Amino acid sequence: MDDYCGEGSPTESPVTSMVARIPKDRLKYIAYRAWSPDSRAETVPDDWRPWYSEQFAYQEARYEQALEHVCRHYGSATGRPADIPKTNHAAAACYWRRWTARQEMLCRFEYELYVINAEEQMEREAENAAGRKAEAIIEGIERQIEDVAQDILRDILDEQRVAP
Image (tube, rainbow, N blue to C red):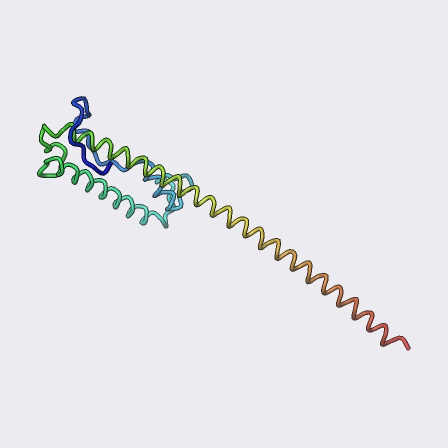
């Protein structure tokens, strides 16, 4: 997939359809990392919004740069799809379609993997919290038993001292 297409089908989409668009799963990934409860930009907490905006701008620039790079490879002097020579239109459109499909799959995989990892981490933290709570309860019970045992021992010793 890292190799450029040497040719493409004449039925390939026109180069005007070559647009730098951030995949929706990349946007969901960024929103999820910004603590959005439903992985949507609209629900990113206010204190995370600057970080989200920064990441969004970075991704947007990255995809624009990728499109420009592909256009230049296929002969565009300006880096715009409209300036690709007509003889390279099919190959450029073919490569761009494959590249964007690859990015969409990669973004979907990264998002799902991140969500799985976050959910597993929350489960581990919940298990650890439950374990710590159980240990605290056991320690409390042990302290109560020790206190009662010491009280009984004191009572016995007090009775022995009092009894002639």
